[in-house]
Length: 407
Image (cartoon, rainbow, N blue to C red; front, side, top):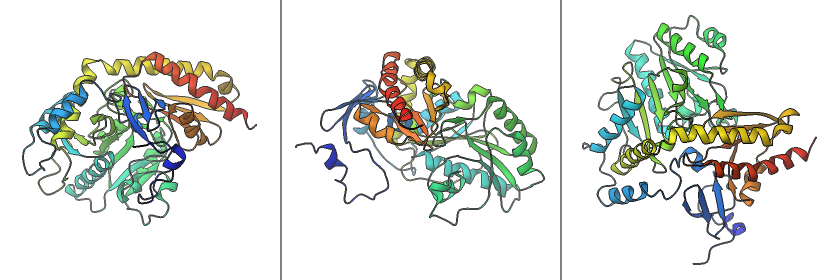
């Protein structure tokens, strides 16, 4: 079968809904931190399927494990016990210090379950219209409820009326949080990403996280931390909030937990772990044997290969190299900031830079741009320093050229 050239690929999906602004390439296969398109061109993958492909592509220990599981059971439904659920849940409980896990299939579903937990928590305490604190520039998904929790008018446009029950506050502003909730008996939870991903790689400060944890304890609220994008070792700890030395009551996970196999999870501590009973929540695909095997093997390989330390080491190397290469642009303000932690890095420019996605692909590098002006790097956690240097070599000249094209 002859592969279609890139220009044909862009117009080759007349029956697929037009919901993505795709780069005109079709990928065929991958190995490690590289992928190839149907024409045989190779790309360095600095996006990892948007923080999903933790172990890169064609991992020599993950692939045989998944093949083994496919030959045994892929799906049975939650009418029956699934032993691998208990195996993976026990491991997530151990890593998080929390107590119980609900499995689903995506980050959106995990966040939706977290919102339901918060409402159930409120109703069980006699609060008829529970309210949840959420944040500016947040992104929690595209269902009606998670879209309502999201802080992005652009993605909300056209889908009103949104779900009620949310109070929105700015990041890292304790006074604003206290002012927005003071005297309100209907507040039941605070919900945020430890590092905003779609919002532009914007971290919550460690001290702020500790203050919010204390406020939730003081007012008997649930602290719910969305670790869908920033969790699973990406920052150099299993979960990004662990850098602040705190523990949430509810923690949605997804993306990197299954290394590409769709999986989501909600990990809960004592205040929330027993809120759901049979019939309160459920899923058809969630917790299926294939997804559970992917999660178990991903965590095992991450630990065996010390990928958290690798994320810290290579991430620090990559960030330092970017700062060094873009020093002039940082100095003149055209690169506003390079931020993030581990292998979750954002480069904020002083102008929209979406064109860089296609330009980088033309030059053999896969990245994304989020929040219009932020280059987002989320490579596989197996990336080494030589590959990080290659990211810098391919990316920085294109950023410089873009910044030099206008005053």
